[in-house]
Length: 222
Image (cartoon, rainbow, N blue to C red):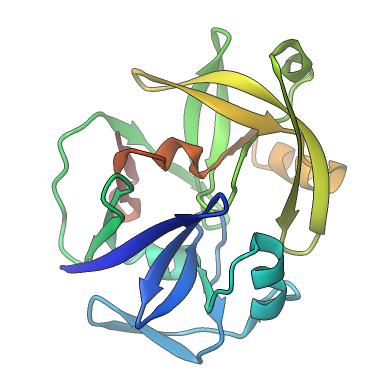
């Protein structure tokens, strides 16, 4: 078991490894960074220096924080994680960690976790993406929810884009979150449809929360 600093900065979630910030990104199937390898909880991983044309330099520009790389599910998927954003602490282990809370089943498409949510009494499948500073809802009903302004975001292979957002009550298990939701560019939206999903749940659900992320057991615990 290893405990690491967990940092929310400018809407993005980072874990500190050997004094360097790495974006904690469940929405990315592959990791990359300035170093050729990294070690977490005694396990060593080799990583590339870019992903889909996204370099560390570009990543730092997009998130507005100088970082050392991105941790995707090729690394995160080897561990149990307890993310305590109330204390800024990540507990990571190759052993099973226990956390008492409601267990939300996770599914997977191309290395990215998917979960079920309810919005306005309708059920939807959403990607769970801690690398996303807001959530996304690819449905015409989005405009029926309160306006929350526009925001600039980014996605590997696409770059930066701007979207109008709305405040949407999203039910995840027995918990309701009010999430700022935007709309993805058409190419990304089409990718969601291929996976049978209607959006993305971003890292807002982690703010001021303690959550267990257990990809090997296909579960998220609230």
